[in-house]
Image 1 (cartoon, one colour):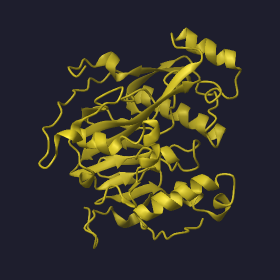
Image 2 (cartoon, rainbow, N blue to C red):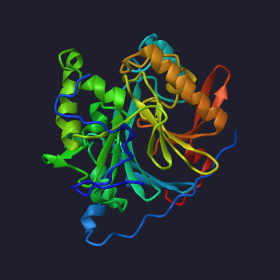
Image 3 (cartoon, rainbow, N blue to C red):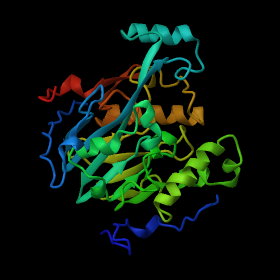
Length: 343
């Protein structure tokens, strides 16, 4: 059962809570019904629902068992690629040939930024926060506006859970010098936070990201819940180790009735390369061997157990299914199986 502190913000079970201060040291396919948009909430004005993005309305809502899942698109970044960011250990022609074989451009790609709200067991959990104000000049940072369009005010969020602490996942924590989700506590991987707040990292080549953690994560909640593999985040959501992209990245598994949902963060970056060539390196992965092991392990679980998979950078809404294909895998977007009336 959750408790409250003197800020009236819900807290989590105390098993893994520790004090953190400024410079902390060291099968078959599932058919998902699409839920229609809710009516405007009291006090919400018409302009809150305006969305002029290229993929308007920029959010989708699904039901997984007792859980309601809303995917909110923080933004889209088109550009050259996918090589050398993806397949960074391969020749450009090899990557281009694979793209062409899948009817995709050889030298153009787009990265999506999919934040997720999970409502389950009376809790409203936001997973990752997008770029925030720092990304708005480039068309990012749309999370809070699109949350409102989806009928979710920032005040309704009672927990923010981070898959990891890269800037595009933590940038939306603070807005105008204050927590963007004023009634929320924070949950983050224990190994992840320890890495980014260590003296070694703060003085090393990743000092800029470490400073962002100091500026955004610690001010949001100076006493967060620290998570490890297998910890219950809230009833119905379990943390899963997903190390490699960063030292302490987590995925979150949502209990969903007949099939669970795996919210995989940056385990899977690309709908072709991450699955058809899981051993190819991604430039942003900090430990390539661990990242490969994580991709294979979680893709294998998804294929063998029929998990639905949602990933931060896959094409919006970032949700699909995985099947085995010899020694590799195939990713099938949910729209292949799910007929909707929202198009």
